[in-house]
Image 1 (cartoon, rainbow, N blue to C red):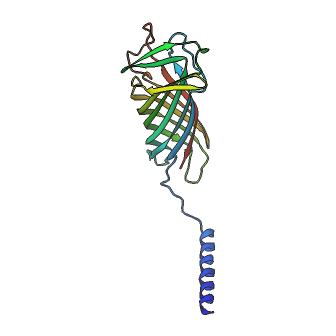
Image 2: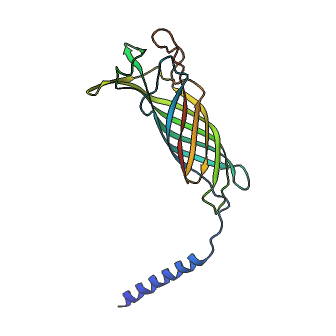
Image 3: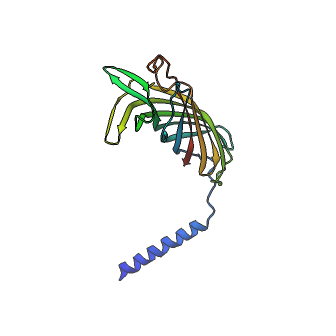
Length: 230
């Protein structure tokens, strides 16, 4: 009985302390940080396509990562972001890529002759951002504008061709430019933010050509949504 009474006393004391703590104003964290994690979904547009090359299906982007927020002002509404992330990108066109020995040849084919032709990349990315926001230590819904750049290393890239619904063939494509870099801009309010990326270098290595000699200098413009999480 004594044990039961002692346990009840301890529980009542604990609840009393919690109730007092809940009523006590909590100090404002004037050293808060913003937007540490991100997840994004976008659509890849291929610019500077060779003659007769068209995009088909949904050329998508999925990205996620962590950004270290480094405030630069006393109000902490201006900051710098440096992070590490991962992205997978797909590009659907009517370019038929064929591996011949160690070389890859490219041919523009009719969209009636293939089901889909995809170039897919997996990339480790380093985002760098100059950040402005209207946040405070007590306000969690705010406007933001983040501008900067992104450096990426393509550690895996494949070409895949589906000629009909019953068969497909693919191979690791060494013509993909390993080092990708471009400019980024994200802006929005609270959860919903528009994200844009403009590549400063081509998707494939210099000298890559369509059969016939026309160079493949396609660059990527990416538009989508990005979600930031503390």
